[in-house]
Length: 99
Image (cartoon, rainbow, N blue to C red):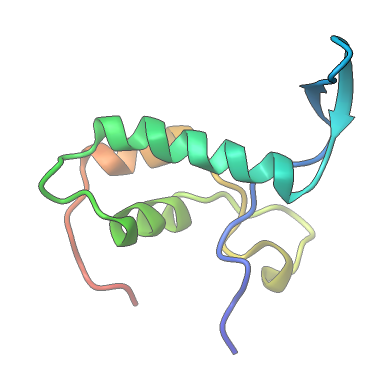
């Protein structure tokens, strides 16, 4: 079968705001999804507009992910997103077919 998820992101015990003005600890995809969206936004600003597309961005995020020790591939996919590694890949990206 296919490996899912493709990648994982920071999403446990993230400090976030409350409606009363304080902070609380947040966890789950509701926290991890905005982390990835922010990464994609930053990386998009670094990418060549002629090659920028969703498939390119997914390939960069997957290929630059860092494996999480002691976790099975079906729990983490290719690993945790890594913004610095992804930034290096996006500036040197050459379109190619996925393997």
